[in-house]
Length: 250
Ligand code: SAH
Image 1 (cartoon, rainbow, N blue to C red):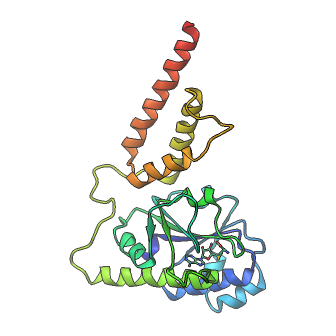
Image 2: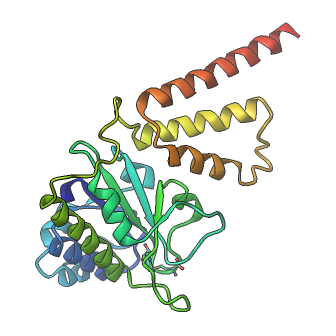
Image 3: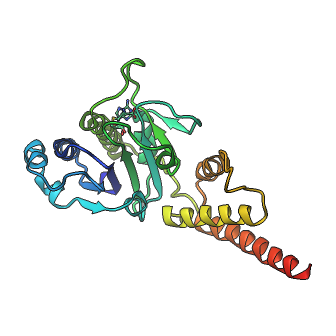
């Protein structure tokens, strides 16, 4: 199960922190590190702070966007030091461990960490199924990113150890008849939904308000499978076709 977890760092400023993250991951048995536009990488400070986890740094995937980092993932979790404007399904690290125990052998989970100075943007957080907050003292809630990764990976490890010794394994999405949609399929569906709502003049692109975040939250909460996504997109395509037809009829 720990092999199915990808740690994603977005726009990390200090290379030393990337090294600290690699070390924290390797201590806990995680291996897959993905870096979205790190400011400086590779870097000697990263190697120094990794102290022996340099293999994780060498194998780290460096990508240009969060979308690329989430390719092939079925469950995406965003971490945040503070609460944001629209509430999202929220887990603590231990509950995240529980959710991860249900991952099927061919399902991948990404845990996303933000910038040292301002965390993840709302848009990035709205790509996630769940948010995770390490329950800190409210008036001093921001951990160093290496420390935050350590806490999360520790809980993932504890859950994995418990799962190994448990007969009755909880399953997340694996007792389903159809495979869950992955993040690329979901993103394409959201783009299609947004465009269709613009076409039917339900969504004003000049004044989008919180419509897309709310709909993203609704669909992500439902964990749609591949057929469900195809059906929804079929409805959107039919709506667009009917609209074109009625435009030409006028
Ligand atoms: N000042 C930033 C905090 C950034 S800390 C802010 O207000 O958002 C850098 C990253 O470490 C965060 O984006 C998050 O991924 C992780 N992190 C720090 N403290 C955390 C906490 N209490 N719970 C969950 N993640 C945390």
